[in-house]
Length: 448
Image 1 (cartoon, helix red, strand yellow):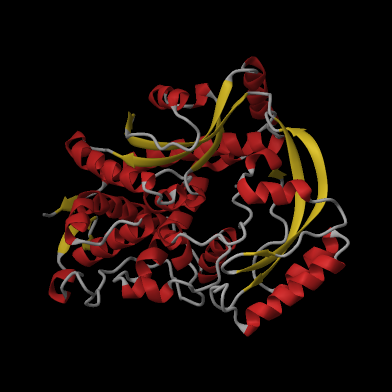
Image 2 (image 1 turned 180 degrees about the vertical axis):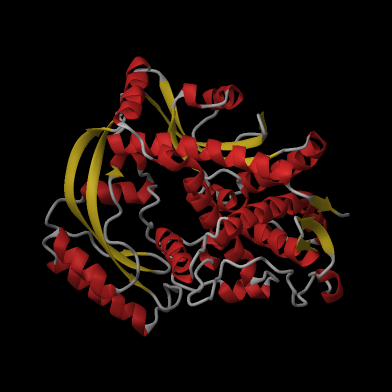
């Protein structure tokens, strides 16, 4: 199923979308300030108040408290569907602590360069995550608090990720500009590899700076993989704990050719079925966990690409099909009228704006072959100038309209895609090099 659409009757997985949903925190003041120890509130199974301020690490004078670690490990457990039992939380603690140490190093570099991440930028990032997941604002804010996770834990993480991206932009300088010669070289390499396989991949990267910590990282990776194979969202886990710069995009690396990947990762991908999650893969600098979204031949992927508009009305409460509310009945009436009267994509786009759900009207290019199940059937039947019937889900109803249908060869990347690919590789390399430098120069005191 295309991630751009929601199937009729499809319910949200709490475990898979927890992090994305708890980002929906409107009006929260977020300043680019040094992190302070968390004073956690007592929660069932949580850290006692007296123990919350206990120091577990000092990073160039900044403290990481036991409360900080507890908040982050609980957030991870909620995100991936792990139980928040003491045994599970204790198993997560070593890797979570090291992740927080690295986060402090990044934050300090952001502050040293006088980079400020504003409230508005945080709000925009939150809104984008909400929109991508079709979620109303604030859905799980109270759930997060009830499960013993400080709201600031999540906001601090987003702030550091955005600030670190700015740091890397400064470090790269002129290298953020991709030249015509750079693109021509990429096109030449692709032409030489025409017909060879390439892979659509997402990655979670767990760094191992010190060989003495390799066993802890391995245990952490095993825990993550166990939850991913049980149904937890790969994108959420990547956003929470991957140390790659693709973390904010859910670890999505896009299409990768064999010469762009670590040989160990490539060997695994060559044997993996689409949709599988790998075992931990040792690579230079750490451990890689990958999932395979698709395989194709370089230069060859003829697909039917649809341009669609969607209008979505959100329910004010989850749908109970045997007892719909008055608001839900009203929404069904509105969408039924739209389905009968809409004659163009402009009509549907205007209706979506009037509905005010926050979901974008255009999902972008939709490859028909990438959709499955009931949605595939809906899309195949669409014709220009005639809207779909109302498509009912637990959280609302949408109506679709086909704007165009054309054949494209997606195996030939566009100039923009090549530019993004080149820049992504440069950013990732710069990030790892700078982190190694900060770790070497840092004064770190890890306590038991």
